[in-house]
Amino acid sequence: MSASEVLCASWENYPEVDALGGSKHELIANFNHFLPYSSKKCILSWAVLRREGRLIGAAPVVRLIQSPLHMMLVPRWRRRLSWLSSLIRKTTLLVDTSFLAYDAASPFLAAPGEDHSEIRQQLCNFLLRERNVDTVWIAEPEDEAWLCSSGGWDQFLTLPIARIGLDKIYSFDEYLA
Image (tube, rainbow, N blue to C red; front, side):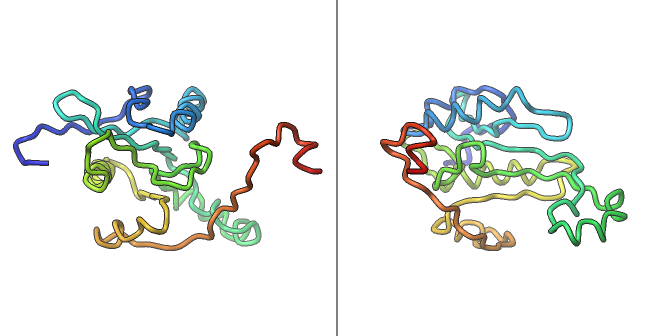
């Protein structure tokens, strides 16, 4: 992307992300299904990147507003540190695939012909500029983790999510059989 191009990053609820999805139309529809269930403390929206009005990139974002940080701890420690909850409330932006049915791919979507890593970087820069945000959490495949480390982000590895093949299984009883 050249410096003369006009890029605009913003928040949108229902951008035309289907144009970016390729094979991810169902996953995008899944995230859009949950958008109306946002609350004051948990807001779902798309971070989008446009060039001269045309959508070129997007990422699903969950904004957790002033969530008590101690709730991420195991129950034993959560009870012990609950007195700190009023002091350690953080606003976090989560960019992950939890509302995309935990797809084993990057949560950053790029239009065909666009540079995926550049789109990702521009959207990350946008998220970092947000006011009143303490943490930006990006969950992405391990093979793309170098992008974060090269950008100076702190990293940690979580265990992979187990994927169970459900093709030709049409009921819970068939799954158990």
